[in-house]
Image (cartoon, rainbow over all chains, first blue to last red):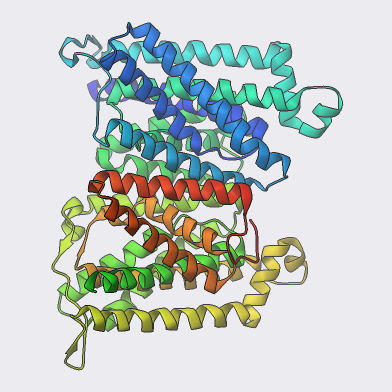
Length: 288
Length: 287
């Protein structure tokens, strides 16, 4: 029973972080139509900005998180304008864009390792004062509760904006058919730039959240984003709501799997799930 | 002089990897990140079998066989996909194999790795000197080169080309495209395992960190730089990317920083190539 409650808690924490990654990834994928792996470097870069401003410069927590999120968004926008947009203009295939984004990831990771060493680091100032809450035999930290609440708020905000605002409608139009959207007067290039800002900022929130939950390492961004991409594919790629469902499902499978086997196999479990889904439901479990 | 020999040996091992990956990325147009896994499978199989006392050359063939078997299993899934999903699936395979190397401690000794791997011997002659080993690896490189050129120019290779250019038409002409793609993938994987065997017995020590995703990205950068669908290009790329960062060593950076600078260079090369020369130096095919 206690194990079940703990697994449930862990599922919600992991699911919240994966869901954030999947939302940002799906936003970018739905408009730009390629797997942006460089997104991983941006997400973990945000966590390193928080590490620097919060621990070295001693900024207040809220301001350093804001710095991290804005830096992530800005970086996403700059990379889109300098690298991805010229490639798109030239009608490069999405494999070319993917290879370029692998390059972006490699560059970002090595810059982070040069600036902050490739050691594992924690974001919290003092680990001793962690507030642990207990319900029904399971333990959850205050940070984790904040992560879950933030994820739910962001999720609802993004879904509301996509569904009801003019901006959201324009984004959905671009996702549907970019050329036609341009013909009817939607400024698609500017909006795609904005989507990269927004998606990268949400990825930054995910990176910061996982940094507070389990620490940062230059390569931990890739691990995180791969889970997010797998969640997005399991749910049905390009759809924000289904991505969230996929994230919760993946987190549940992983946590039960980790309980049955051991923690080191988390990544292998996730990819085994991915391969099974690709074999039997290549368009995602929740797609119609 | 020994240092130059060392670089030459590494360059020929990496050329074998580049040649074999070129069969997948260049000839089929499928970006695979699974190559580090097959490289590792070859290295671990050979290391474990030679330590049990078997001759290196037999162990090498067994390593190639094991890699081919793994390629058959994962390729049967992957060959149905292309584009992004293919990249992600092959990446997943590398992650799974890496965590096997790391966590199956009873067999692979986990992060400690396997030390004291023997240099090969043949009819009483030991390839223990650098010169002898260089000759051995160049011979294997020549064999790989010949095989790759033969495969791409054969009737089979031309059908694979046709599939790359237009899979629908190839299907309409009656070719079972999945089988062709699968066979090419298996051939590529076995040569990657050959490179792995050579690497293991040359360095004499292997651990999981030599077979990470970064290695897959490195091999990919190599062949894209040299030029896709061009065997000479693959070798050129490997030689450039092995020799060039060695210059960083003489600038006098500490090892960790030098390693990161090297990664930075590879990443920047990938971006610059995609932007300005997607077909690489000698390439005949662009992604």
